Length: 217
Image 1 (tube, one colour):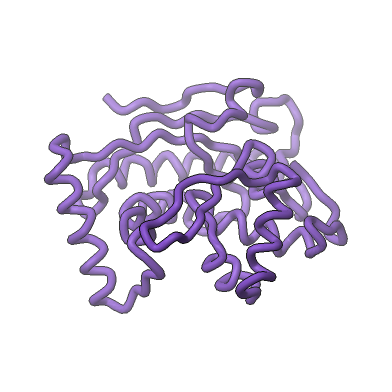
Image 2: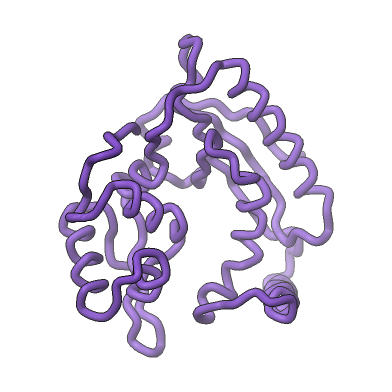
């Protein structure tokens, strides 16, 4: 997906909304709006409600303290991956994909990561014959390395505790719960502007041409 750099979404610059959705692809609340855009209270809630009406997000869970969370829709996921930059050469895109697969192997072999990458699927412009690529759209499927659910939960908590001791700040329990998962995703993306990550369960794969390029054995 490509959008104009001067385009507005819900009354805000598209780049700002894209950043909000991109940083909070698992969950979104007024807390995250305040953190990314500096809006608080009713202004933050109004923005979320506007994004919901425009079908970029939809209501998800409610926390024990009453905090409402939203999740990205298919349209919101597309916006979170939208590009403003110029296309890159296919050769560069292929190099980035090769480096990504190297990181997949690193994740699966490194015990400090609590999840392994079970599957990698490529879709979007990379699968065309074009000499240039807008980005490298990749869907991944993660699974816990520890098969015992209780043991895995304990390891996730321990990992978050260690990160907190090293200076990581968590806004709430949900962030702690997803830390180990996001840690893997962050490592895989490696801050690349070309690599755009989503999950294998993303609805876009139902309508887009795609190809499995890696499966854990």
